[in-house]
Length: 241
Image 1 (cartoon, one colour):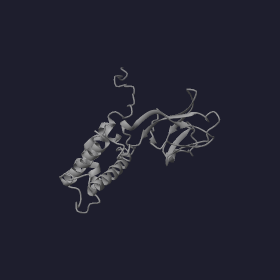
Image 2 (tube, one colour; image 1 turned 90 degrees about the vertical axis):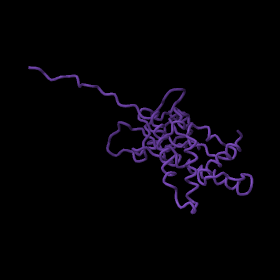
Image 3 (cartoon, helix red, strand yellow; image 1 turned 60 degrees about the vertical axis):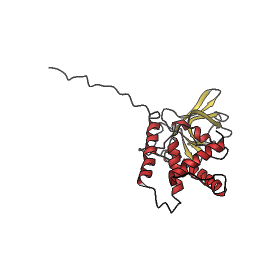
């Protein structure tokens, strides 16, 4: 299928979900306008998916958008900030996988990824003195990078952004995300400005919510942190007399 055919099919699926019928003609003025609006509503829904959170409040890092040990650039000067590539959504925080700076295939420094409130410590504990956080498409380091790090390559696990849907780019449809979730999410956003709808029907809203939670649960099955392995002393009995 061509990009045009893929988009037309998607627009028809969204329209059918909302109104129970197909668009009569996608080539006339109204049809072209419907396509343009559907692209906008879909991309707004992608903004929502990128902001989804897990029950513990941590961000949902979709596994199909994750890149491990991604080279995100080179340190050019002595600085305490570093710009992330435009297609990078955020670095992924994992205590077992810190951000590293490498020179000639050797790690010269490693940095714990923390939230902005933890970038500096005031309690005197320096067990983890090197920290980095993410603020407005910038990595912010807890200290100025030194001469051994300048010229080094920054590697870390990242989540990239969803590719936005345009008339010339339909790569979004190649991702392993449920097509019905994309359709329902876009239809949800398309329905909100339509005062004639008067609100989503309970079954419509519930179906979308169930699909979203199902997608997040499937995502967690392959992205949960390893469980801690502890010693089991249950077999030890008391001292006999």
